[in-house]
Length: 150
Ligand code: SF4
Image 1 (cartoon, rainbow, N blue to C red):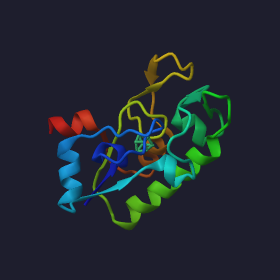
Image 2: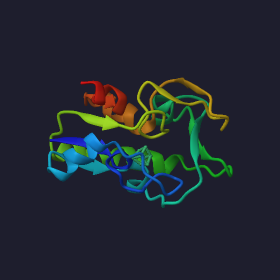
Image 3: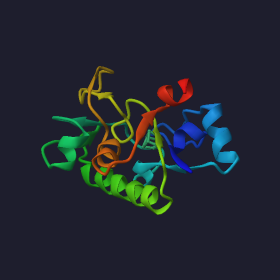
């Protein structure tokens, strides 16, 4: 069993009320080979919501209290992002998932690259908050691009 970012399975949970459907991932969920999780909703945020980015570092820094997550209206949403990360980790542990497929570039789910905190579309190296927490706990995470290549 694997866990996938809910938006990749076609659920309209992104900040703008849309999904990021990948048919192969949707099929896995339909066949009950994967379950979905959206860290931002698990953290208590709603859809639609303002887009958010990590400011002052990466997801690792957020977990260490050295960076924060703000939405583009300037609201500090760090606590929701951290809560969502721990909720997602709990799901991953409960079902003993072997791998987690996470949406690229997201401040929660991004693996390898995330938006740089300026809301200009620029990206920097680093992980989102949930991706960072899963990595710290030894969970194998991959992006949808990696997954679709495998
Ligand atoms: S938090 Fe993750 S699962 Fe939820 S909408 Fe953002 S990228 Fe998709």
